[in-house]
Length: 290
Length: 193
Image (tube, rainbow over all chains, first blue to last red; front, side):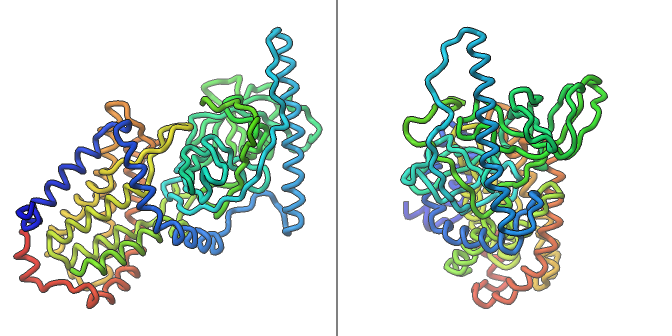
């Protein structure tokens, strides 16, 4: 052993051999590296937290709500929260109607899932893109579980928690999911029913926007709001805002459809904190299997 | 090289990389941002012995791997693959050790220019590792929204940005040279050819 320490080159080559083996090892063999990473990241967490806070203070997230003051922003947030609840009820009604039509047994779940809101600070973020996961300073001891939904500004969906340790958790942003289903609600018709709203399958893109195709017969316009309507997601995320339609263009390959680009109002890698919607015990398990 | 100083500087750079550096990210240009850890690697490779530089590159690479989880999809926990950054940084280090005899090491602009080369070299190896991993069905979140070629272009952008930031950062690092206790040139060559 001492011979190895007298020959640092040999130590280096052994280390390199181990690193090469690890680099190409299947992911299922690397579960233990998560524990090492958690320990390694502990001393960086307070500094990362401070760094993210300073960075966000220097470069605040782009506010696309159009609010000119904190009061107006707060009112808009409250409006969005209640609109989400209203839209979620509409979607729930439509879902139940469909189930009744098909003579299926209606599950006893209720929409009003008890939710605890919890602010979590981002302690580490990744500059690779809006789809890269971030670390939060809330974990299992605070009630966070895998699948917990993260929002910002009251109602804007950011993503879901994918990994939880006692004091921290990993948030996977919306942009990392292969696809997400939503409904498009017209900007100038707030009373429009969510049940009859056009549905769209959105695919995230590298720049943080999402792309989808909508039947030509549905009048979709710039500024329309897209809300989540995806049974693969927990009920606590239902009808949350995914983003706003940024552009509508003709789809030459599919003449009966329009291509829409949806831009989320906030990107996870621009924020210093998020709000977690922790479902209280007894809530619905819908979407937990995805 | 004094390893205590290396640990302090590595800690500072890694902490900044995971938090504060978000302020420099350009969302409109494929979300590119500078890589200050590479700037530190370039600086060390300019003055340290070959073996010390290689160990520093390996250490910084492993730390980067442990700070950048790889998503496995929806609700599966992320995995930390130790290796891509480590191999990339060692390759970049080897390249820098070859180049350092041809450049003026005491210039901040040298640190900046070599940061571009090092970022691109490291990025090339990282992409290659993930391409090979994808051959046997491993998750390739690294280029989730694009091809490896597109990611390579992105690395070019990161390289240019890192080079721009590397000039002032290199100037600051050069001011700290007396702290590092680097050995003179003939020792540097003798320790590991």
